[in-house]
Image (cartoon, rainbow, N blue to C red; front, top):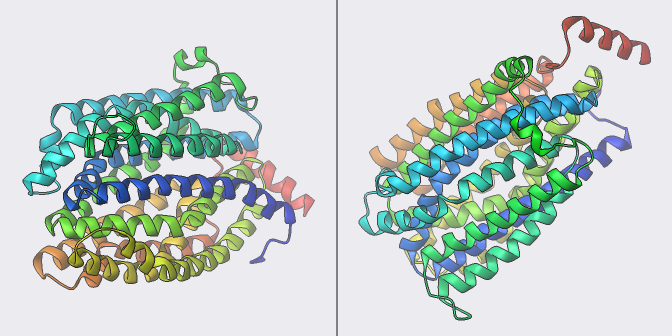
Length: 467
């Protein structure tokens, strides 16, 4: 078994998927960066309020990503078999579940924003700012749900450029209206944190319009039509989804709740810690966009290759991506270390916040290596290959047996130094990276979810003959 794929088409396909996705992620980070910088001009309260207010949407997004990632396990393998009809059935089902989930979160955010914010922090000023932000941002959930579901499934069939164009447009829309509504420029009212929420809402609507036009008018691969939205959920498709996709949804739900607990811990450590973490997260996301892009590409390629019935090739590809993940993790660490100073010093924050940010960033330079390994291998290869139950076990265990309890003890009980608190909060990444290493090497992660046992044996025999 070779650790290195020599077929150039493998790298060309990986680059064709990963680069647009990495640029897309970078644009998203750019929006977050500008939001943080602009709101940072208003002080730590506004920055912390928007950061914690976004946690509700973050939970929804993670759950929706779990839903679409679970559906993507099916659609990527169906695309390997060129079965567009089944992809449309999965897509229709995913839209129905996503919209229902979005409606629930929208109602909660509109009716009890103060209660939701008080879960994260006890500072009245931050609660008030976050609730103001949340009442507006709640209207983005429905449109974002449709957009995210569409993008995730389009990605599994190799359609990634439209999302890049969409995010470029959204970036400029968001920046323009941030400038207008936060500070009251060009005759617009000065609205502060509420202005940032309005700008985000406008940008999300623009994204949804673009993706709707593409899905229903331009796409020629899936050929999804309006009537497909109203078709009944296919029983067989739903059963396959429950077996292989539901663990992904469950995974993201439990992980998002755990992530919320981490935000609660940080919120109770004070607005300075929250503001410092917001700054550091932008740098972290900026330097790890390529890891995310390669991870998403790994999932698509694993699913497509398995769907084609080429199991040995899928395993060879996974070993190559394992080596690649280590290389990209080390590269991200070096870049993060190089830019951490200029980025932190750019923000108008207190000296205490600045010191905390430097301490967090130094630890991030180490943890990003483990994050790259788990992102590319566990959430890319293993999940794309249908091994969703294994990913569920390790992701949930790492969050609830490592990050949450250790972070709570370190930050709120023992009052340890900032760098050690952050190490405890992110210790799950180390555990996950170790877990995915052994699974990749075993080869037991390959799960063909679209074939019967007889079809799998036939595919294996055919591949053996070709070799």
